[in-house]
Image: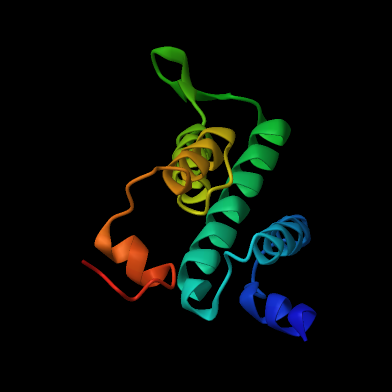
Length: 133
């Protein structure tokens, strides 16, 4: 059943490489008990962002980092537009991975939050202790 839920969370219009990554990622999120149906939009955004990163990277591998613009004044070199796409996707991916606790620092921050001796009233309530003083 988890496999069916996992596959429904992965957009169908992304590359196979992005789908494989998302399947592995969803397994990790389910193992950590992080992934819920409420996360479907964020998971979709993460999948599409990673797909954009892959496509931009492949384009740069094929075309190179620079393009040449030929004018009457001669040959001008400019950055490939996929460089910006790749960089923007990388920044967005990092932010999304942090939100899901999937970077070393964000995992450490989550662990230290759980270990804090003084829990907020909301943490006490959500954590099961409904008696808030």
